Image (cartoon, rainbow, N blue to C red; front, side, top):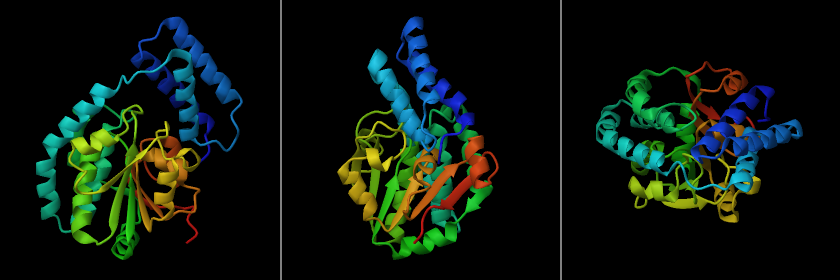
Length: 289
């Protein structure tokens, strides 16, 4: 998915947020914003939003240096999500279709993404919405059939906190299918994205094969991913990609991906013909089989 001019305000807001989180001076903040504006001015037309975000954070890192200002936010999200898991697990087990309910809650977990909202304030409302949420695209039956046939399933993780709800989905998948399941998360901190440490914190290590992506991008950009991650993706029968950024970076790749997210970006909503805040289970339009 290419970057539209409507994406520019979000990119500038992300730049300002990152600068504020790093507690830079006003002069440094202005320099970073000017550098990002110059980058946008000269942007190649087919550059995806995640590629722009990666370049933006590289500019910030080179201009002001970066620590890990989101460490506490990720930890707090994980703790909050872990507290909610027992009740959600019970609802999944009691559902007519545990897989669909687990996917609904895994999508609801997107609320922990720092770009979406304040999870501590919004999570209760989102969890009430999830069991009956409308789908803007629902390729669920096709995905379910392919999961039963798969020998290797890759899950591309999204945010900390959300990763705990992904565990609930993985628990259902482990009971349902015989496939090897691999979870790809970040090796090192990237904003609020889930890391290997986050996956271990929510107890995923015994349940799934964890693989760290060393990329500094929020999404999975194949050219920027490690050789190990690329190989895992190439060998997958089915890929479940969490969050909107994966749609932005992978929707033109010839890979058998099912994108799982809530549409919270008007550009993406228009692109997939879904309403804002609708849930999405979408088979990759770029997959040729």
